Length: 391
Image (tube, rainbow, N blue to C red; front, side):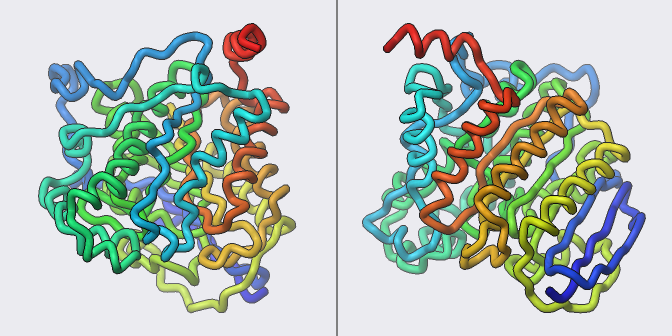
């Protein structure tokens, strides 16, 4: 164990800087303030809603007997076996659903099926030039980190790679609204935190978290949002998007500073920090650190909603995350975040599943969701009664 660095940002100013010689991760608490938003400027107060918000196809009708859990089978990727060239489990979302179904928590009827995000939806955050670049297979190959994708006709890339990601993006936007209505929601997919308005990377082609926040803000359903990003990698996409928002988006990011993406621009207001060696941080250090910073974050900033990026690449043995959190530590972490948001502060929370590069990732996420149910941190009595009546 070599060193821990954490910093707190608020309104663009470094509040504190602390070096602890025990671990190899970084925590960033970010709330940005400037007049030049990186995401598109919002409408003036009182302005009529644009058609994309007024009649939005993503906000599907949801029955009382449906859990605010969003998923459809089209989330899962498969493109001629090339997905095996990347360590990401391209079928983990289906595994999560099937385990929840096998444990009689959900059925196809009691979850919410999202619609695919359209280009108009994506343009709420993304610039047209970036979306146009995705019409070139070589650009998508770079984003997915699977070079042979560059050789595929783009219509195949659109169907087999990007379309599933657009469904997941639509799922995050829908789940954001569901969280406000039900107090919580889970998108079994999503969490593409390396993608910003103008560029993708790290298997992230669409900025679903930024889109979820901006949809709610433009519809005037919220004013302030907090992102709690516990994926092992820096969430540089949403950090770029909101780096100049005016005191309305706060980011708590716990990540391994020695791995991708090393995005200095996204954290450019930090002081220069001496490089530290990589270390494998376990439960005994990771969980108390997360708890402490959740407490500090809510003391500084009171959001209308929490976007929880629940990446599991901090799991021990993950080849890309390179941390050492146990499966039980992942379950405790998720329980801690939901307890903090729902019970301690009554803040709506949306969870997205983000990164995780082992075959056991999907089952661990499913077990964590089942634990949230067992601890009564998520519930839907109407869904449970519906399932009992259907047996």
